[in-house]
Length: 323
Image (cartoon, rainbow, N blue to C red; front, side, top):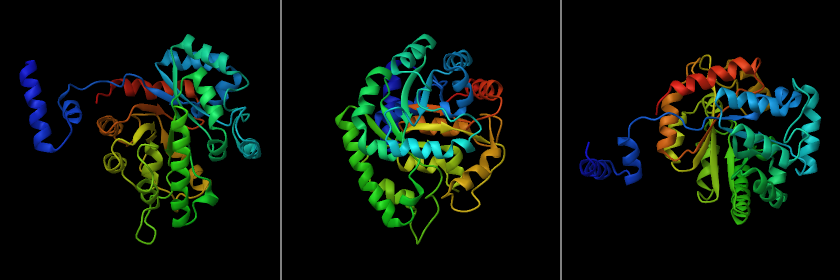
């Protein structure tokens, strides 16, 4: 197709569908592969504890180009550290997190050597409220842009009013993040997706937050677990889902309840499998996500056994997909 004809096609698609020129361009462009597949480091905590440099090198050799860290960190709020310490004995690894005993310069050096970047990190609510300047300082060394809350504490999402109050909190956090050049993101863990008194709690939260201040990270596994459709949310909140966690399901499974507590999450861990080895149409989800503004995609197989095999399978199958 000649350049002049291609431009006419873009304008025609835009006029007929109501899509922006950018969206029309994406629709007409040839299919592409995921350029920078990433991984959430909660997939490999035991390897990181044993040999951080070796683990990152292994991931780089597999083909991963981005990583997402998980806290707490040395500068996290003490309450967050105490909470993490209280569950260490229940974890199938030693409870390492953050920088795993290294400092920021060492982490930055290891990532640079491996050709890996850090676009985002996970952290806790209290630290987001009180330690934003510390995140800003860390981002100078590590380069991340997104500071993401992986879940709202259970005691702060009991009622619809709780969700409304949390929306106000999110807007404030997002504003503080913006002031220091960061972006605040929220990762929903599958709760709040089922109707309560005629309303969907998550939608109440998202509708009450400022799209310019509060960005989103979708975990497709937990979205399905909460009986919701990832494609619906990606389209409904187009431009807000900037990050995705990619998990496949051996077979379709949903929470035994509303997904509000960790015990229901743990029940579904056995259903996780490598990308391309389950029943989820990962390719369609990534395609829809990219067309609606998603920037980063992280494979996440929580504390997976035999990560050397499972995570290699995931990225090899991702490399075969086109979007």
